[in-house]
Image (cartoon, rainbow, N blue to C red):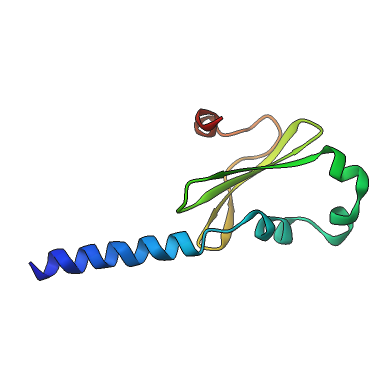
Length: 97
């Protein structure tokens, strides 16, 4: 019985850590956009960031001039590259459109 409650408690702690450390759009832009890109008015016209939030982790894909860029997985406050960029949008993310 103690093992069961320990496992439930551990699962709740891990879930809370994942939800709390799920990075936001501002975190993504702070890591991947330079100050010059942030202030560029032409880039603002053509730049769009798509975020799909799964509560425990998020995916971020940049779109510049309607072409998708690299997709990153944001989990535990870090970003991991999961696609190669142009024309390589992950198929499993298309289900969430």
